[in-house]
Image (cartoon, rainbow, N blue to C red):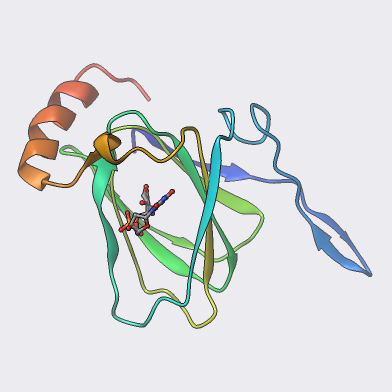
Length: 140
Ligand code: T46
């Protein structure tokens, strides 16, 4: 689907455990300006329901599992994140919803910008009009 991609992180594994480094502009395609994480989400809770105008993010489920619905006016996909060595890049103007959080799930998010409430598009009908235009000529 346009506007998203899976990223594989390095996994240094030995008898002492696993270590995955994430560096900006290398393992993720932007400078990391903000990090946040989502934890202790009850079963049946669905979060998100928005897109961003400019923000790029990489979601990594570093413990447990969570399902991410990513959607544009043209395409839609559900992706299960359950591997700490795997990231989901979500670019601008992709609608997202997060659900099916497992017990103990930890969703780590790396973001290209500081928090900006004006970057959110939460009304789906407004989103759809803007995203049709945005994705019209996009190749990836
Ligand atoms: C996204 C998905 C994956 C802040 O004050 N600073 C922050 O950096 C963030 C991310 C949130 N907040 C506050 C705003 C709300 O009062 O935290 C509260 C919960 O945020 P929100 O309802 O936007 O959470 P989600 O899970 O719906 O969405 C979040 C991110 O906001 C969003 O950018 O892409 O995770």
